Length: 113
Image 1 (cartoon, one colour):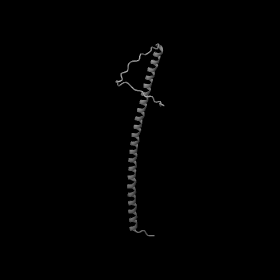
Image 2: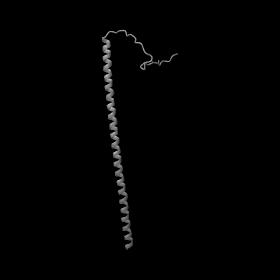
Image 3: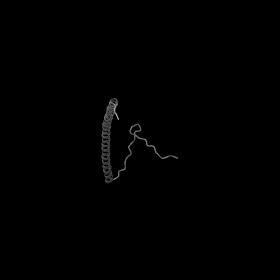
Image 4: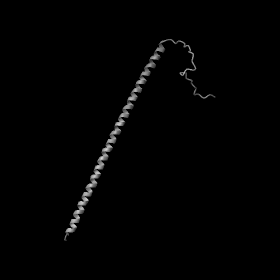
């Protein structure tokens, strides 16, 4: 079996062209993948930072609410202790100025029949 030099040269050129093309395609794919992964990683890190900030804000707000509740509970307990210690004095109703902006009208929620 004789191998012709023209077919060998064509085969070598075909192999080289295929190798260059595969190298080009795989190199571009690898760079694209690594850039995409870096971008995704940056986005995930940004999201994690946002979540951490949100949770720390929520925790701080809960702590503030607990502190307010504790403070109000102390005030109510102190007031109830003082009212239990002092004898009940009948309160004299103070006249209400109807033009005052601090007068609040209450409306009964019960249905009138």
